[in-house]
Length: 72
Image (cartoon, rainbow, N blue to C red; front, side, top):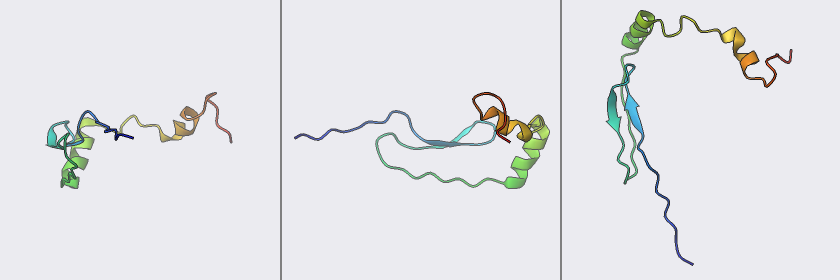
């Protein structure tokens, strides 16, 4: 029996909150990526662009059902 190699396309990456790529893994070798972020800066940016302004967590249960009704 021969061996079969699996090739995965694409590479993992880390981006900042604006989508800028900070680090990218090589597609031909195993890699571990790490990054450090200023959490206060991220929080300020989220407030500025209203990332979570229209969030409706009370609707999550309904959205996860097939019929649009909660089981409660």
